Length: 334
Image 1 (cartoon, one colour):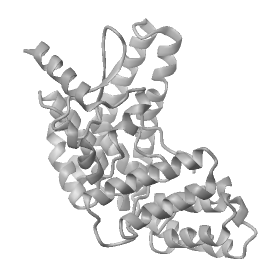
Image 2 (image 1 turned 180 degrees about the vertical axis):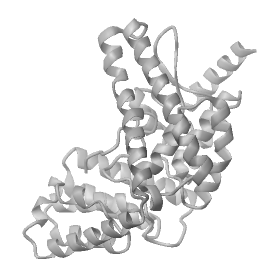
Image 3 (image 1 turned 45 degrees about the horizontal axis):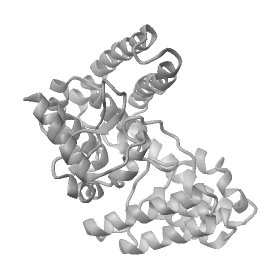
């Protein structure tokens, strides 16, 4: 259950997979989704605290809240907790579900995931791997290999440089020449990568995971998310259509919607954008439209609670304080 993507802007993947194929058909309500997200967070926290049995049970509780609607990520993570609790049958139940109904295909990961070591001596292990391997072969057979290679390189450049930001700042200081030069390097790479991504989008449209894989699909979003406002506004309608066609993640679209809203003088909708006070260096949540109901909107697009999200910046969510700060920010702009 180890992370495979470093997404500094997102921080929405709390587990090891990017595949999110739904394996039930009845759509849960917004309230059910919110409860589901709350319970699966508790489950993952229990996993991190090595309370594996309670973690697994909490995942089961989460699945019940949405009428058994879930994604392969959460089912896989539940299987990890069951395996670590030495509940082998329950673990296999989840794994065969994600393999057979969820078309789970991350063969390299499942074969090296130490959380599942207790399953290896069971005769069902090889049967499970056969299914996963076939899923992988089927998925990769449809991919555009040349585009996947291009997008893999862009992803590494986009995220690799951003991984280094905190280290450079900690070593040399926020206003240092080293930090400024690092941002220049990022800007240069971003401009080059943007030209490549625009060519793909203009010629091919917003391609889905079935053509360019999960990481390739995420790369399209990341580069547009880091682009100038006029570029974001140009491709925002395309991404909206891509979400309708399941060619892009609603949670990623939410981040782009927020960024465009703020950059065009409006308030964000989902609370994804974090700002930093230039004087104190402290982080805060940029102005939100209807902040009292933000978690309902976040749940609708598959995002966790705002309080949990902003804890990554050591921010505590207080809606009244946010409303007061928003008024102050907007008054200063007048």
